[in-house]
Length: 268
Image (cartoon, rainbow, N blue to C red; front, side, top):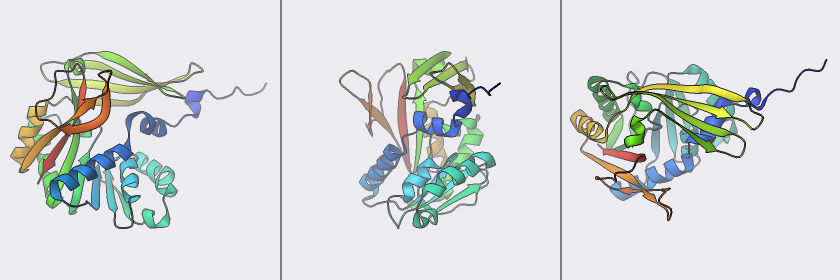
C-alpha cells in the first residue's frame, strides 16, 4: 500500500507562514528610516531588533548597503537556528558579515550603541507589570546612541477587548487570529495564530501568546519615566473604503476605531 501524500499542513513551515501573514519588513524599514531622517536629519545605520524571531527585519536592514549593520536578539535557540539556516544563508557574504544573531534575554543583554532599536509584533507585551516594562524600557534607553530612537507597535480598540476569531485569506493558506481570553480587570489577553489549508488540513495554535494588553497612555508614561525625552504616536491612514492603507503619520489623539494599530516612536 502506497504511503498517503502528506497534507499541506504537514508540509508547511510555520515560520515562513508567520512572515507571510504577519510581517512586512520592507515597510518597517522604510518607516523607521524615513521617521529617523525626519526627526534627526540623517540616516540611521546601526539597528538592533529585540525579540527578533526569524530576524527577517534585521536581514532586510543590512540589504540597504555596505554601511548598514544589524543585531538580532532572541532567547529562543530554535527560531534563531531557523533564521540562520533559512534567512541568513540567503544573504550575500557581505550582508552576512554585517548581521549578528544573539541568543539572550533582552533584559540582560549588554548594551551596544545603536541608532535604532525595535520591539515589533507586540513582543514587549510579555512584560505584565509596570516595574518589568519600565525596566525593559530603561535597558532599551541604555543601548541607544545619544540621538537614537526606539520603535514599538501597539494594537487596541474595543475589538481588542473581545474574544474573537479573525480569518485572512492568502494565496496558499488562511491565517487565523484567535483572541481566546481577555480579562478586563487585569488586561490579560491570550491569543493564538493558526493556519488552514485548501485540503482541509490545519496547523492549530502554531503560536500562542499570553500577554498584558497595554494601553497607549500607560506605555507613553512608562517610556518617559524610563528616561526617554520625547514619545509620539504614529496612526495609520485610511483608504477610500475606510480600511487601513499602511501609511502612518504623527497623531497623538487617534480615532475611535473598533480596531487599530499604531507605532510608538520614543526619542532618547
